[in-house]
Image 1 (cartoon, rainbow, N blue to C red):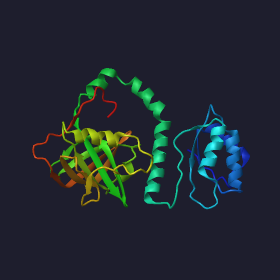
Image 2 (cartoon, rainbow, N blue to C red):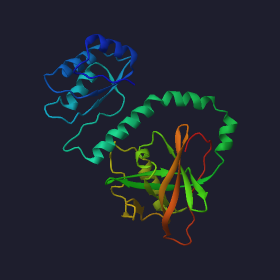
Image 3 (cartoon, rainbow, N blue to C red):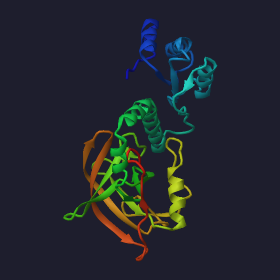
Image 4 (cartoon, rainbow, N blue to C red):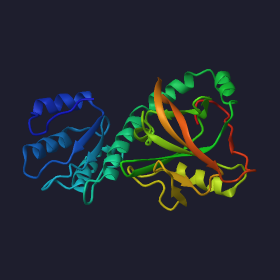
Length: 281
């Protein structure tokens, strides 16, 4: 990854950068500026076979519109790496989270082929055996600085008795990862086996959301003491606080102390999740 000040970069540096790069992340420049000239040179030098792009709103006054740059790159035959970030109105925490998620999506797209190649080299019998490890289904919710988030989780297990604790594996490129760091609080919504609400909740939270979108919009819930959502469709919930995290290759394994919780349905059985192979959720 390399960054360049478009107000200071020269044409030679642009040519060298294009030769080294495959994805061009361009912030919208001010109109009639050195940066605008540099962007025009980047667009002229980009190759449809070698480059993809993402346009980011600089959120400044008098800048080139995001759709204008997108159209210019499209006319050159350059494909989008991820959707452009176009900000309408004020820069809010939700907008900032959207930029964060857009960057995570870009990183995921750039490593997709590498991960697919690695998966093919994995021992198939070993992967099938790992897939036999069963788990329950949960929806993890969190709120941070007024922004709320949610995701489906299954790599979660009890981890300690004193204090009561659980472990949660979070992919490093997961959109919710920035809300699940040491000191953060979250809620585990435990889903019920055989309940139609479980199917609906899983379907909702597994859909693709735009960066920064409110994933809880339209979902029946109440706000818990830690600010995270407690889903009305859950049969029980746990409120947790992350005490530590361990680096586990492409995941973080968070240890969280359970600080609260309740059961909504005394006789409910937690929904289970079975995999055929262990290389995906």
